[in-house]
Length: 129
Image (tube, rainbow, N blue to C red; front, side, top):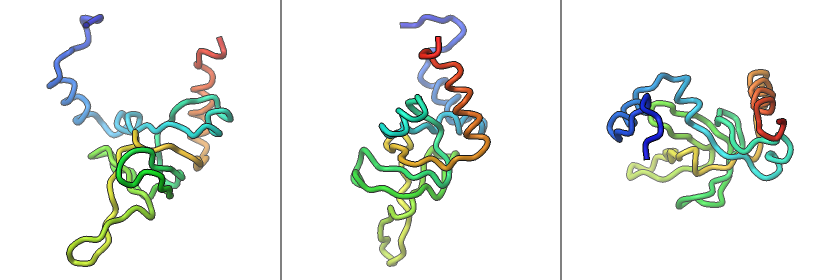
């Protein structure tokens, strides 16, 4: 059911906006949930994924494996993880691209930008009101 007249409900237009969005909006869309320990520590449920985070795979063929994020591909909304590879026919290893929604962040790589983001999210969370 459509609530707002300013926002379209057309599937075609929504998909176009999603895939043609700029890099900053794609970063915000590439979000993974936090592990239980990190949820308790930071009082957040999810956060945008980035390079050098340690993640665990929750869904798919590689379920249960974990590793460090090597690359975040914003063009196709995929993440490459260090030890998650498959053998190609020419005996070369290639990384398996994974969707961020199928991952759980176990360890954050903290930078000044990320600390600022966490503090902003805490400030506007409904628990503080």
